[in-house]
Amino acid sequence: DADVTQTPRNRITKTGKRIMLECSQTKGHDRMYWYRQDPGLGLRLIYYSFDVKDINKGEISDGYSVSRQAQAKFSLSLESAIPNQTALYFCATSDSAGSSYNEQFFGPGTRLTVL
Amino acid sequence: TQLLEQSPQFLSIQEGENLTVYCNSSSVFSSLQWYRQEPGEGPVLLVTVVTGGEVKKLKRLTFQFGDARKDSSLHITAAQPGDTGLYLCAGRGWDYTNAGKSTFGDGTTLTVKP
Image 1 (tube, each protein chain N blue to C red):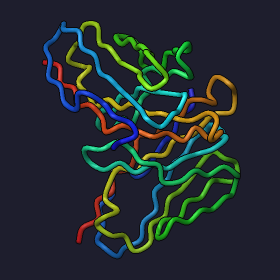
Image 2: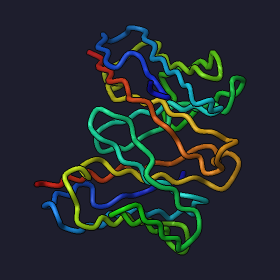
Image 3: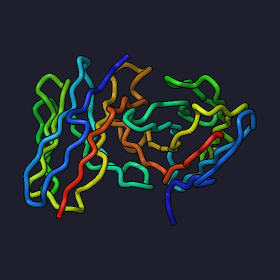
C-alpha cells in the first residue's frame, strides 16, 4: 500500500464550487505539505503543517484553506474554485525526527480541472 | 524569497549519451535534494547533498553540491530511456522559518530516446 495517498486522483468541477482534496499518510511523519504544480513552474507551496496544532501559509495560499484533522490527515479546500486553480496538486510529508534535511515523500497527486 | 533556477528546461538526447543539468541560486542552502518525477506520479527523492563540494553517486547518476552551497549539478552517464522524467532540485533554508520548507526549482524535463 502507498505510504501517502490522495483522493480523488482526478476531479472536474465548475467555477464557484467548493471542493476538498484529501491526503492521508501511514509514514508516521509529523510534517505535511500541499503543493501545486503547473507546467513549467515546478512545485509551489500552498500550506504546510508541522504538527496538528500548527498550520502555516505558503507562497500561494490565497483562495485555499487547509485542515489538519490528525497527524496522518491533511485536507486542502478550495472555497470557491476558479479556472486558474486548474493544476496538479501534491501532498507531501517529512519527518522532523528522522532527518534534519526536510526530505519529502509525495503522494500520487490530484489532477483538478475547474471549468 | 529563495529562488532556484534549473537549466536547461528541456533536454532530449539519444540513449547512451551523457548529460548534465544544473540548479543555481543566489541564496545559500543548508542542504539540497534532487527528485525525479514520472508522468502521473509524484516526485521521488533521489539524493540529498549537505556539505559544500560534496559529490554523491547513485549508479549512473552523479550529484554535486557547489562549494558555496548555492548550486548543484546532476550528471547522467550513458543515459537510458528509463531515465526519462522531470528532474527537480529543492533547497532547504537555514533559519527556523525556512528550515521546515523546501524551495523547488522549475525542473528539467529529460527525454531519452531509444
